[in-house]
Image 1 (cartoon, rainbow, N blue to C red):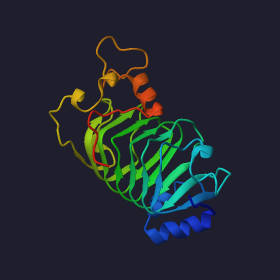
Image 2 (cartoon, rainbow, N blue to C red):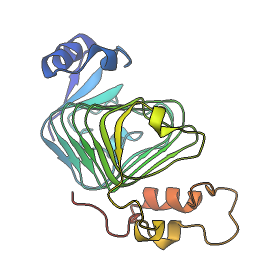
Image 3 (spheres, rainbow, N blue to C red):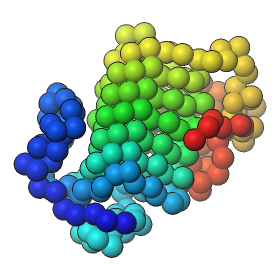
Image 4 (tube, rainbow, N blue to C red):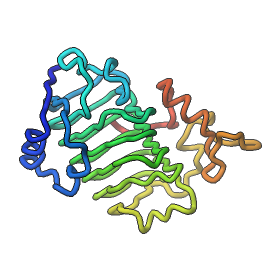
Length: 229
């Protein structure tokens, strides 16, 4: 897959040409990035903290501060970020992935819509700005995670601790298409707490935390039926 290095001044020129607001890209590090022409597709997992496992390491062997996809990006596996210091992902179009799992020092900026079966945010040191909708079957916010911006609507079931008041979060709107559906109809049974919660579980939202993380990193299904990709 074609890729090339992109200096910060050239990145700013591209951002302005595509209509990415200054208030969004001014939060990024003013360093070198990797430019990926869009539309782009990735087969399998896209690990933001392992450049050597991305399809862009051949054309750009040295890791940069982040990836700038000039157009849509489709990943048929999961997008994952576990470690601090991972590459930023800036998508100047729509982003589609099987699941999205963000820990560590994540930076995710999307100019369009984001579509995934599950979106899981579990960390505090992050920059996550989505200028369209976030469309999922289930979205999980934990460990003080809250996106910096969802300009459109957050679609699907959203699980978050009580201290996070989504009505005051920077989210354009909330829409659960099946608000009365039990969680077991949305997630695989392996993720649900059925007995005494373990030390890594998330009892407030009824989720087995260790199982969630293990299945995400192993590429195993999270949702019962998923959504159209």
